[in-house]
Amino acid sequence: MQTQLAPEFRDTPEGQAAEAILRKCVHCGFCTATCPTYQLLGDELDGPRGRIYLIKQVLEGERATRSTQLHLDRCLTCRNCESTCPSGVRYGELVDIGREIVERQVERPAAERAARWALKEGMTSTLFAPALRLGQTVRGLLPPMLRDKVPARTAGDVHRWPTRAHPRKVLMLMGCVQPTMMPNINSATARVLDAAGIQTLVAAEAGCCGALRTHLADAEGGRADMRRNIDAWWPMVAGLNGQGPVEAIVMNASGCGVMVKDYGHALARDPAYAEKARRIAALTRDLSELLPEIVPKLKQRLAKRATPKRLAFHPPCTLQHGQQLRGGVESAMRELGFEIELAREESHLCCGSAGTYSVLQPALAHQLRDRKLGHLAAVKAETIVSANIGCIQHLQSGTRTPVRHWVEVLDDALAV
Picture 1 (cartoon, helix red, strand yellow):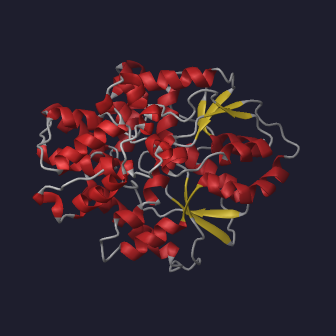
Picture 2: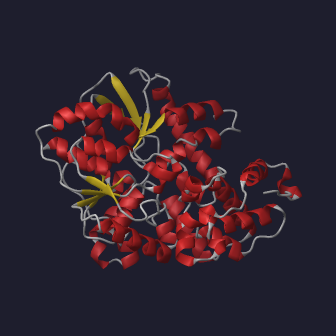
């Protein structure tokens, strides 16, 4: 697809990056078949091809409108279209560029600005934990949309962290909301890795991976989060903390994983951080990528223990499309004695969570959630498992079937 950049974009990094992506696009339309919003709305402008045309028009000098903004807002950034694109168009990168440009050109209504500010600042604030605990106390009195976002309080071993030291060490990102909303995911990860002879380290200064601000059209804010994390992690990556260098940076939230793996690209033009960012990205592994190596040890531990009979697995878009990791969780869990199945229909489609999307676009998010839960229900599983906190909380808000991270189920089995 040829484009003539307007003068204001011709010599900018964002304009040049967008132009390179657009050159690959052949407007074939294969992407529309796997776009969740196009499936729901049937509007070309609510599919990847239509949004690409809108971004192209803006880059060529046509002023963005409120309608342009709305169609870009409705994109989940699930990147399913990237999995089906025969030309390798980096749509996720393009839509982030388009959103940031449109955000500068189109002023949002005050209520939208306030909601987006609250999400960016509130979810990454130290006040998030006490606010959530207060919400849990009065959860039954909250309006339905807000109650959906407040998980019930958890009990048990949520904060029990292993104390053994191991020669093998990995670094783990705790996340911005996960330690408060679902703390057992992090401690279960550490316990499972401990059972396999791997010690999990944490850098307390690390926080949001940068995805939250980046996908809300605040690319510079996202890069600031990335730099803070790199500074927090670097002593452990470089072996400057007296324990030797870590062998990997492990992500148990696939949304964070896809972002951290992109640090090298996002900070490529930053002379102070470019090389460190590339090193961080190269070391980053989704938790499922460690499974093939640690399964034999875990299998010995599980040999004489009962495992849940049936699990339904929802692979997050950030795992199967963003990171292009498919089949690893299912094959490893089956080898460990679990019965686990994908939904027989539309297992590739987004559940509607998509970070802050379920807050900002609740009607579409709930349609996608209910559609996904209908397909998962057909598996007739005891538990639904996934690999991203956003998907887990969003799906749980629409079903009585327990929805958990797969590592929590594995941890439970090891503890029996």
